Every structure is written in structure tokens, then in C-alpha cells.
Image 1 (cartoon, helix red, strand yellow):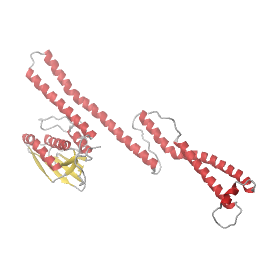
Image 2 (tube, rainbow, N blue to C red):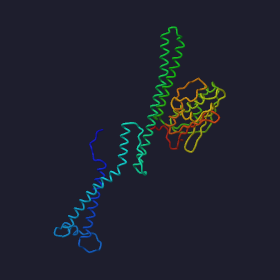
Image 3 (cartoon, rainbow, N blue to C red):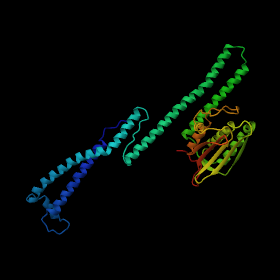
Image 4 (cartoon, one colour):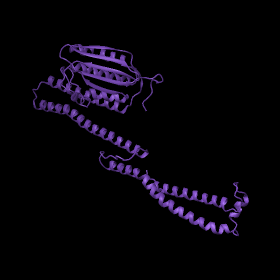
Amino acid sequence: MDRRQGLSVRLKLTLSYAGFLVVAGALLLAAVWTFLLRGRSDSFHLPARSDFLRVFDTSNFGPVVFVPAGILVLAFLLVFGLVGGWILAGRILAPLLRITDATRRVADGPLFHRIRLPGRRDEFRELADSFDMMLAQLESHVAEQQRFAANASHELRTPLAVTQTLLDVARNDPDHDICELVERLRALNTRAIDLTEALLLLSRANQRSFAREQVDLSLIAEEATETLLPLAEKHGVTVETSGEVSVTVGSQALLLQLTTNLLHNAIGHNLPDQGMVWVNTSVRPRTVVLTVENTGEKLTSQLVSTLTEPFQRGTERLHTGHAGVGLGLAIVKSIAQAHDGTLTLTPRPAGGLRVTVQLPAASAGTRAGDDQP
């Protein structure tokens, strides 16, 4: 929006300093004239009306000498206030000009520029540090979005390219088995649908566009266990669920998706025989905790640190019943962050993975159904 050009902050501060100095000087001169040059006794008392009238008496010798001197003093104070105020305002506003310059550089170029304002901590230093922190988070977020967009494009392109290849082969070979072609196309289409739904769910979690209500994580864990119990039995994995009532505030659907993803990941990355999965919920002073552990191959800390990145699948699945789309733990991380929680992945010494989700506990004054602003 176009706005009319106004006075700069530096000029406003300069005029304020000069005006204050002139007013203070005028009051001081008035006090000197009233109390010291009035020709009365030396005892202290409030000036009478006649004292103020004598100030403007031209026959009095005092005004003839004092008024020109007072004018010169006020003129000197005005010039001194303007010059000194301009210099002082410039020194005070120098950090703000540096912040403004950094803002323009970031707006016209890359996000790696930082202010790094030196000196002791004050209001400008707080502003500069907050701006640097915002730039760091923004740069990280943009880089993550660019990397995610590139990975998503690659993942979506793969089934489409394979589908195109199958259709070309079928068109060039009329005797090709149609049933086999349809089945392979169906599998590719299912994978593309799963990937698209996962991307939509991830976007919804990142935007925090969901209604909040009180949710018991222990009931969520039991529901997810019952849902995936046939898959666990199919692969010979035993699931044990335990814990206590753990109430938080959030979206029941998203928290169910979080728990289901963790449990599905624990079943899919497990031992080929007699695997175990432990699901536990607990309550801490200000948080509720959901823990999912599973047996499996030994993992390094370096590998575990990459598992929450989109389309990072870690080790190969030992069970090929569901290939996944590489967004399971990425969705879990986004859902946890959308609920102001944390996600921690730790390799188990005996093999496998321990995943811990901490969420804020529901307070007594929390109202169910509050929407996220």
C-alpha cells in the first residue's frame, strides 16, 4: 500500500531532543529571572503577580539586558539540540539501520545472511537475535520444503513412468497377458493413491488445521493394536500393549494415525520370526508419553537420525506385505510437532528401535473442541 512520505525517525528524535532542550532552557531562564532578578528580599517565597508584570516592564533595566541574553541562549540551545540530537539519534538508530539493511538483503537474495549484532543485550540486540533466529528457521524450512518437493516428485513420477512402460509394452504386444497387466497397473495405482493420501495427511498436520479435543492415548494404542493385529499375526509378531490413562488435547484422527504408523513400522521392520512389539503409555508431571519398541536388526545412531526424513526407509523391510511410501515416520513427526510434542528415536542395544512421543498433558481447565487458531 502506497503511503505519503513522512519525517524519518531520526529527524523526529532530533526535533524532540532540540525542542525539549529549548523548553527546558526557557523554563530555566524564567526561573532565573523570576527568583534572582526581581529585586525583592532574599527569603524564599512564591512570586507575586507584580513580579511577573515587572518582566515586561521596559523601563526596568533587567529586561533590557536579560531578554537579549536569553534569546541568544535559547538560540544556542536550539542549534546545539539540533546538532547533538541528530548525532545522538544516528548513533542510537545505527543498529536499526543494520537490521533494515539485512532485511533488504534477505528480501532480494538468499536466506543465509545474518545480522549478528555485536554489543551487550538490549532491545535492538533482542530484535536482531530474534530476526537471525527467524531467518535460520525460515532457511531450514525452505530447504526442507524444496527437498521434500523434489523427493515427492520423484516418488510420484516412478509409478507413472512404470505405468507408461507397461501400457507401451501392452500396445506393442497384442498377445500380452491382460490379467497380469491389469494386476500390475492396479498395484501401481494403489501405491500412487497411498502416496497422495500420505502427502495430503502430512500437509494437514503441518498446517495444524484440525479441531482439538481431549484424547486418551491408551485407548488410541488399544485401537491401533486391534486394527493391526491381523498383520502382526500374519508375520509372526507379538504385540503387547500396556500403560495407564494418558489424556492429551488434539485430533483423535491424527493421533490414531500417529500410533498406527508407529505400530505398522514396528511390525514391518522386525525379526523374520518371533518378533516382539511393545506399546506403552505413561503420564509424567506435564506430559503424556507413548512408547513403541520393537525387536529387529541392530541400527546405528546415524541411520536412526535420518528415519524421520521424508522417503527415507532405513533398512529393507523383512516383510514385503506392504512396501510403504516412505512417509510413515515423517508423518508421525509432523503430527507430534502439530500437537506441540516431541518425537525421539533411539536404537535398542539388542536390535530394533525405540520410539518415544511426548505430548502435553491435558490440563483441568482445557475445553474440549477448541479449534487451533
